[in-house]
Length: 373
Length: 148
Image (cartoon, rainbow over all chains, first blue to last red; front, side):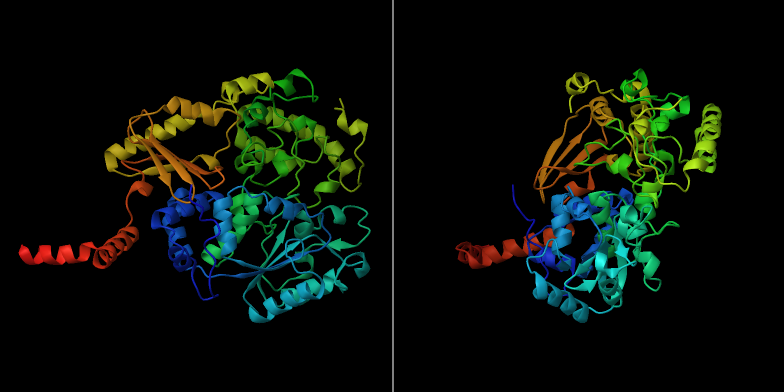
């Protein structure tokens, strides 16, 4: 099999992706295949392929600066496991990742010099990707090369065309932000108000969602359509619950009550085991994980709702508590008459508990793992 | 994963319970009817549909395998075949690492990607002309042209 994957490096920032690919001997037919896979990756309908082809033809090479603050590197781990390797390599060969302190070879002063140079050369045009939250209680909690996360973010954001907070920490504060938030962790959007921000939450985000958003910007040079939490609708437009293959069980009122009962074995709905699918918006149910193998619910575990703000303080992963009754009512509306009964009954059951758990942070204990009657 | 493997690990095959395959077959029926009546083509991106374990395999099994199979070597392999339903094609794109990067059901006379592309043909014509002009054949062509 021919290997093209290292081929499409662009010679200058004025060069277009289309020209670079042709120079590398990538045929128009291969390019169309690449566009079909790209459309699928960006969660766009196949009818968009001609538009994508046209846009990518003239797409120019953007400079990308990636800053990692209070994070666990899970987001970078996720990114480097994006499974559409050929597509990714073409895309990533056609962006210029000028600073990423986990992935770059340079360290210390050399690394910081690379960031400053990229900022100077591409001022006003570079994409800024951020993973991790920013501590504001005491800047000493997290520094890079002696520079506080806050200073580095504010300085680097000045010349950015757009900012992409990757992961729930950068998007909403995430785990560092969880009660009692000792470092005073905040999100990018809490600090920056004058730049376009595209949130790509998840703990971590799905690999192809990260690359899909970068690709969207590269392809169209514009921001994708965002929801009220700043997330691209293409990936976060529908709840896990609405796209879940176990949804028919919810509609029929068939629930697993424990992790080892008949319902669990039969693959019934995990709502009563604390599934946050109804309030979580992400692409897991269709895009799936690990080369499209499965996603948590398919593996028999409730959704934790990791792409939502405050997901860590939701009142226990295994309690069916955190669903506001308005959500249940809306779900019932979708589901039809059969579910109205089940939905409102669950809503009643949850109302008291969600009130109790709303503000307090609860540790996960053995009790959490057992279904309460 | 095969159906035997699902059974071994006590994984429920979704379609027996969730029944997503039937509606997809209806969508394909609509697409085929539309193609016959108006000539309009349609594409279903299987990656955009929430399928239970085993459902994609079941759908593919139901569609069967028809007369035409094509293999494409373009940025990794692509496997394209007509299903037992004429005009309904299964297109699977792989990358260099043999992972699936896209899987589509195309309802069309012939999948677009199989057609030779204008730009590629222009490049090929130029290449062929250059080869003929520079190679040993150049003199022959010249002479041949004069004789006739």
